[in-house]
Length: 145
Image (cartoon, rainbow, N blue to C red; front, side):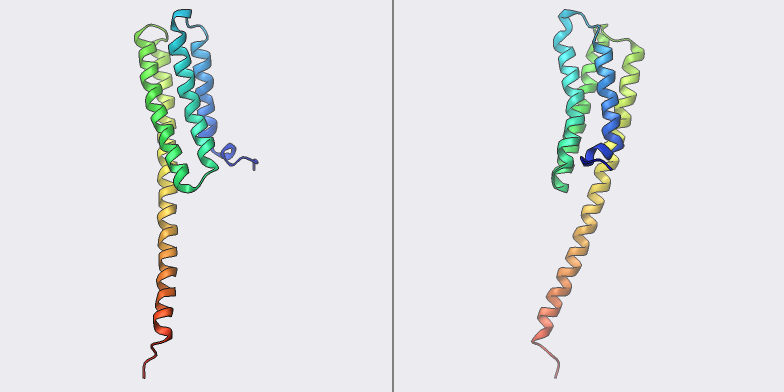
């Protein structure tokens, strides 16, 4: 087990793979394409950073950060498509990146769903406990004669 919780998440490591893919795919971009190169790197890093940053927060905030990660995935899809259309990456590279992003998106969706399910389950348990406490309070002074 790692000191930082996010380092234990498979999704975190998968996003690092995508960041590496982007660095490798863009290192041969010509100078005139430096803006899209930087945008692609930034978007890829945002996915990873949102997972890491959110993992140290409350469950609701973690879900929010994971959703922000999904926004960065959509941004990455647009950027790799632009790079493909401009001839900066091949059709095969585009397909490879898109498949990796689809996989990451599915993993993020599953993690979000799991956290939301757990959150609802926790709420149900605490609501039931609260109802039991309220019932006990209401009955304590109203014994049947």
